[in-house]
Image (tube, rainbow, N blue to C red):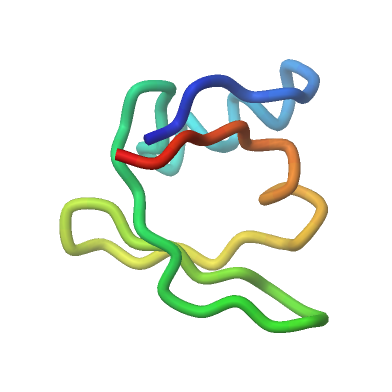
Length: 61
């Protein structure tokens, strides 16, 4: 579950426009050593850059 975003307002707006909000339950589908991290939420898959993904604070559900 997403607890909070540790980023500026532009990244927060970008995630919100994608439909990713604090409190949402997401699942990491694919994570590589380099490159994007793929997550899913409600059947939708999203590719996030590593820098963006590391600014999302989560907890296990």
